[in-house]
Length: 126
Image (spheres, rainbow, N blue to C red):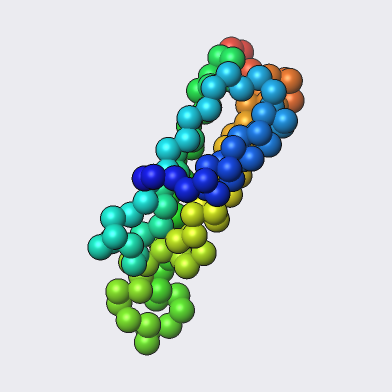
């Protein structure tokens, strides 16, 4: 999609925040896909983030989840279960959520690099 200056600025802010959190990012690629106009009612934005860090590539494919309308009562029309939650139709919310997922993956990777994760030794005695 053609990105507005406000959306591009927000993405750059999020990337800068990731760089402050983990300063060994060698490249970052962000792709924003908007639903086609005739499909816009039920679909939100799809955000793909590809981060290259030493020894690994971190990929986040953020597509808003669909909610189940039946949990809200049987009166809700059947088509509602195919709609994206309203806040995920906002591109800025989608960007925020996608970068939050990227940050969590970077946190996990940073823990591995620091040796903070538990390593299960192979049990060779059995």
